[in-house]
Structure formats: structure tokens, C-alpha cells
Length: 90
Image (cartoon, rainbow, N blue to C red; front, top):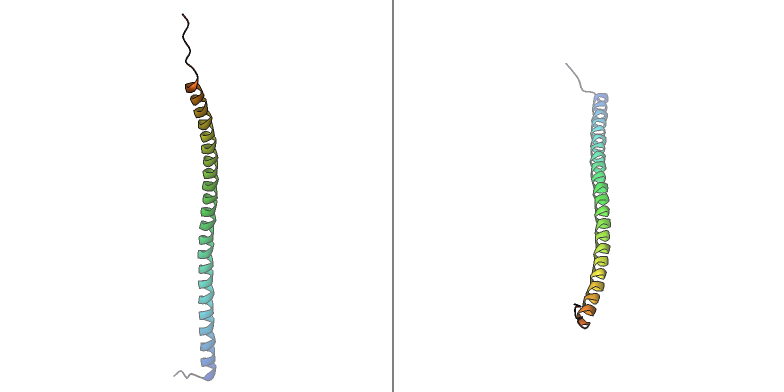
């Protein structure tokens, strides 16, 4: 029959620790991969948000310029409306 000696117990314990350590390292590698994927997605989202912010800023500037032109046109229309009417020739 097979007898379990102190040497076998130590060897089994060492093997168990090695297996647990290996599984732990494999799990860490898996988490590292997951974190890398998440970080990559966050970087992509950050890039998209920055692009959207730039587009919004550009649209805001265009809207401000359009409002300034409308204000100028409104001022000119008021001047024309306030001016005396011309009598057509002929």
C-alpha cells in the first residue's frame, strides 16, 4: 500500500500553493486584460467627448456671429422704416 510520509505532505502542500499562486496570477492577467479593455474604451469615449465639445464650441461661435448679423440687420431695417417715404418718380 501507499504510505503518506511527511515528505509527501510537504510536497502536496507546496504543489497546492503553486497551483493557487498560478491561478492567482492567471486571474490577475485576466483582470489586467479587462482593465486594459476598459481603459481603451474610456480613451475612445474621451476622444469622442472632446470632439463633441469642439463641435459644440464651433456651433456656439457660429450662432453668436449669426446673432450679431441679425442685430445689424434689425438696426438697418429700423432705420429704413423710420426714414421718410420716397415718392416714386414718374
